Length: 534
Image 1: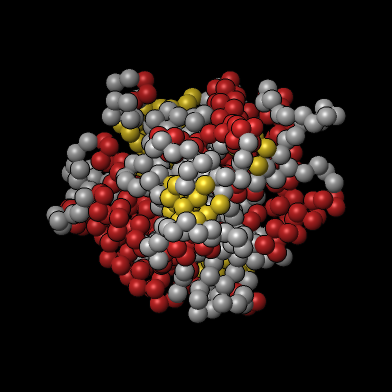
Image 2: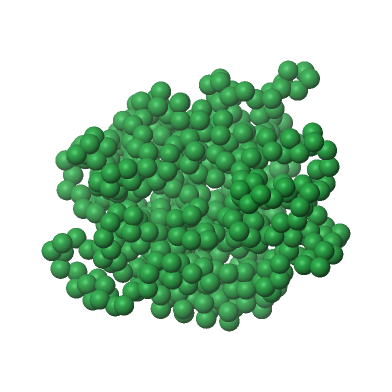
C-alpha cells in the first residue's frame, strides 16, 4: 500500500481544503502540533474561494467605523449575533491580512502606496495558503475524502476515508479534529458535479454534535440554466429579459423576478450589455474568470447574446447554519472536535443573515485560526498518544456495513429495492426547491419534511455498493438528506419571519423568539432553544 493509503497519526487532523481548513492547519502547526490535512479535492483549488475573487470584512482600527459595521450586522442578522464576536473578527482579519501580505500576496496599492486589503483574488490567495501550509510542516492528503470519524469514550480521535487516485482506504488518528469541509448545497445537475454535500455536518452529528441556525438556509443563487456555477456578482452588469425579449429589471428587483419566474417554470434571460466597452469586459473576465466558463463552453458571448438563467439552492453555504459552537475557540459539544468555516454555525457573527464573500470569507480566516490553535492546545493536553487509543469508526449512514458487523437493521434496509443515486438526489433536491424552501409555508414545509423522513431510511441506509466512488456518492446522498431534514425541522420551529428565514403564515418578526434553535440527532431529531447572550 502506498504511503497515502497507510494509517497515519497526528496531533491534529483538519478535514477540508478551503481557506478555513488552510488557516486551521497553519494555526495548529504554528503551535507546534503535528498536523495532517485531508481534503476531497486539492488544497489550493478546493472550495468556493479559489475560483474567483472575494471581499473581506477589513476595516482599520477606527472605533466609529467598526461600531457602525457591528451595529449593521446586528440589525441585519435579526438581532441573533453577538457584537463581541464581530469585534473579534474585525481584529483577527486585520492581523491575518497583514500576515498574508508578509507571505507575499500582491495586494493592489492606491496612489499613496497603501495596500487595499479588502479584496483577495481566490486562486492567488489559495495557492499562497497551500505553500504556507506545506512550509509549516503540515502533511497534505489531496483527493482524500473523509467518510467517517473515529472516536472512543473520551471523544473524537481521527477519521477514515478513501484515496481517490487508487481507491485504497486511509485512516488518520489524532487527538483533535477540525471539521472545515464546507456547508451543504443542493445545486448540482447530476451527482458529483459541484456538490457541496454537508458531509462534515453528518460526520459530526454521528458523534452527537449539535447543530444550530439550520432554518437560515433559504439562499438561491443565479446560475446558467445549463450549468452550476453560482458566482452571480457579475450579473450586476446585466439586463434581464423575459422569453419575449421584454426588459424585466427596470425596477432593480431582479432577484425576486428571477426567483418567481423559476418557481413558475418561466425562463429568464440575461445579457451583460452594461459592460459596453472592451476595457470593462476585460476587467470582468480577470475578476471572475469562472463565471464565464459555462458560457464560453457553450459558445455564448455574454456581452452581446442573451443566455438563460436559473437559481440553485445553496443550503447552509450562503446560510448561517452548521455545527454549533460552544466556545470562542470554535469547540463543539464533542470533546476534541472543532468546527470552522461553512461547517460551523455562524450565528454568533452573522445572526440569521449570511451571503457570499465579506463576512463569510472573514469568518473562514478567523474560525480557521481560532480552531487550529485550540485544537493544538487540546491535543497537547491529552495524556496519551492518539495511536494508543481504542478508537472505533462511528459512521453509520450511507455506508456499507463492515463484514461480520451483524447490523441486522442495516442489512434489512439494504434489501429494500433502493433507487439509484441519481433518483435519490432528484428526490432530495425537490424537497429544497424554490416552491418549498424559498416561498416557505408552514403546511408545505411540514409535508416536505414528512417525505424526507420517508426517504431517510433508504438514503441513510447501508448502500451495499461496490467501488469506492459509489461509497462516496452514497455517503453524499445521506448527508444531503440529513441536512434537508434539519433545515425543515428548524424552519418549523421558528414561527416568524426573521433575517433569511420566512414563513408565509407568520410574516412579522416576533420579539419573543429572540433565540437560537439548536438541534441534534439523525433517526430522531431533537430541538431546544438557546437564548442569545446579551
